[in-house]
Image (cartoon, rainbow, N blue to C red; front, top):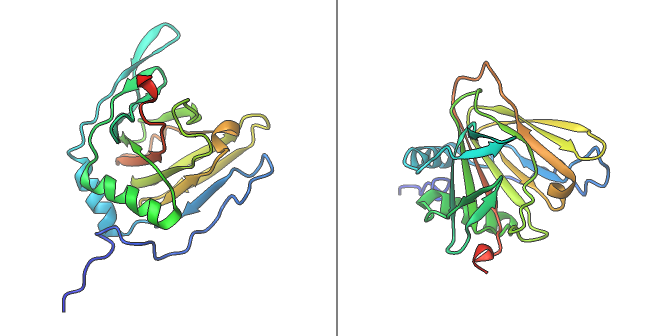
Length: 217
């Protein structure tokens, strides 16, 4: 009898979560949960191959009076009415692709993590980057968590406390899941710095819970 590839179908989580942050009452300990290898190889490849057909763009943002393209490619998928405004960019939600939607469903099964949109960032190599920021836009549902999945080359990911300036470095590998628990976005920033020696691409999918039709009221 042929075995069904449970992993490829995005079945229930088989490994227990390793809580790296706990309640994070101290400024030195961000409220995060890191789960190495959350996605198996079949799941990773399904998403990577699907992403080859994503409608990525490099929108321009205005900084100190000058317009610059963002240093990465991105696309936003979401439910109807879940458009997103951040860094001065208004992004309309694209329809959900097959495996990005399955991962959304898996995150809800495994952790009860509710989301209705995912921002996919594509970093071509170590020259593509993400500066210090918090995911604290007004349309994000208060008290909700954000799930971040890494695919492709390993890159260091940094977190910095707003007041103490304490920094935490995580090496995120392909298939890893990082859950940023509320209220991390109000007290910590995060960034993906440049790395000149990195020559291969990285994908990052961050699942968020938005207030539907926030920008239509």
